[in-house]
Length: 79
Image 1: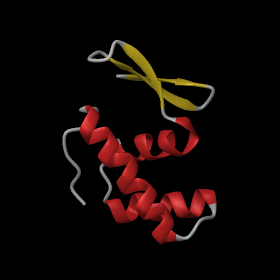
Image 2: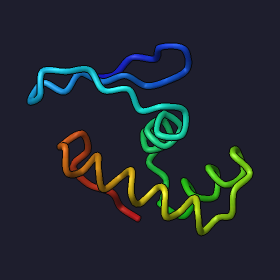
Image 3: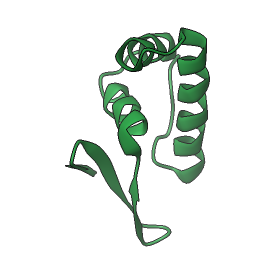
Image 4: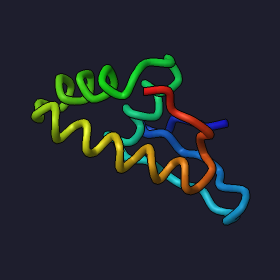
């Protein structure tokens, strides 16, 4: 479960017993993940929204999603 605070996603990490705020870019990726789209679609949407090259957006998405996987916040990504 997560909450939105001032447009940013905040989750409770029960393992670390702390709140984690994803920031604007991470929040955008997190919310896009909920729509069950591919990594390419997420990167394209991120590139468009934040006016960055698609390859940069894709690298940022991979880094963020890998951090979510490592912390156990998501369990899979069908890209």
